[in-house]
Image 1: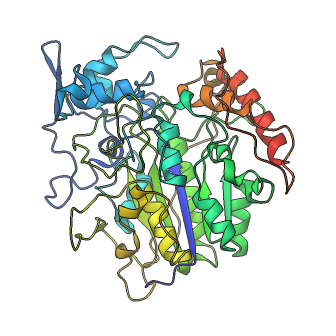
Image 2 (image 1 turned 45 degrees about the vertical axis):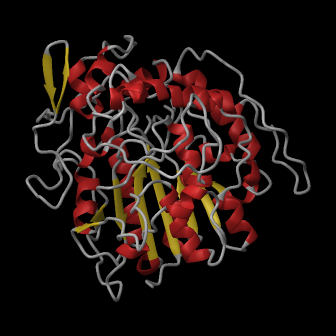
Image 3 (image 1 turned 120 degrees about the horizontal axis):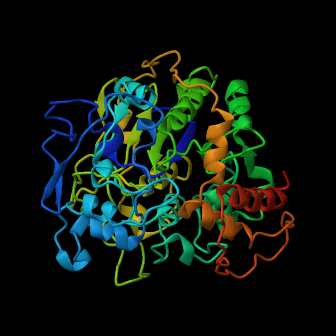
Length: 471
């Protein structure tokens, strides 16, 4: 086994595999990318996949406005207007579903925009790392659901039956990977920018004071060679008028180049770190966010007996970008699960993170759920006998500090579903860090709050969260 002592996960927001990496290896039969023959038909028109060749700030924000990402929207995208009753999925409802979204302050949805993809030249950081190390063209979101269900899958192996952000009880009661690591005396940290979604996990509340740090601390820890065994990095979800920052999570219609800069910052910190030779970096996205992908999600093992809206969590969500970085990975790797010795071979999904961390740091520990019990680990991709692939010394994103007007525009925009739900969830966080012997409160549904602007949601979310974390 490769000598991996540090696993780092960066999970971005709401982009499909085809939209970000579908053109990584054009014409390569050994890569499940785009052929340019893919399309959706709607209203008598064929909307094919396409690329806007000029990479302007407007291009970097396609699709604008935000596509639908509810459970209902996603099933429309996969199955068409009939939803799951229209089984099997055809991946033919993206354009129609997007055209049917209501207008917003960002504009009126145009059916073709959700079919857009970026070229490697337009997203050079993630593309360079995919080529220098490895890309997974068989990594699916854990379920055809919004952000919260998929992020909880990454931490706990389940969404406990909930399909949309606003329905979750907080604190989330499922046992987490962080708790397992804590009990095994393995080090871990969550590095974040404004509000970490992972702070909503109930069984980390008693440890939150010691394990949640701002992203700047990640850069310092990497420089000092002081990274924990497991690091989970969350992007900036909100606009910050005080710091003149806009979101770097890539959630449409946020500019993808700010996410590129975040990926570069993470990689460059690791590449120059004393920890580099013993590090595995996983870059992925929580769900596709309504952006087109042509690969039909396969059947999945239900994590448990929980379900909602008649969905048993027996199918994966849409493919999402996934790039795996380590000096143990040969350059140009196409990383896929090894064939199963008996039974079906499942694709990678977010519970593969849990499976990988368990294999490395929690040998002998049982799975968290039936889903991560069947999830393929990523360690099979670390095939070099020594950590000899150092990749590029540095990667760069050609991006300047945002203009104050751009920050103001995003701060004045109505919050997206993720931003609004995070702000509402923050309202149920304690206003002080829980004491070591405190009882965790019973889960409660976050209040329904109508936040007029991203700035108001940001203020609500970050103020309460930083009090809770003692920061």
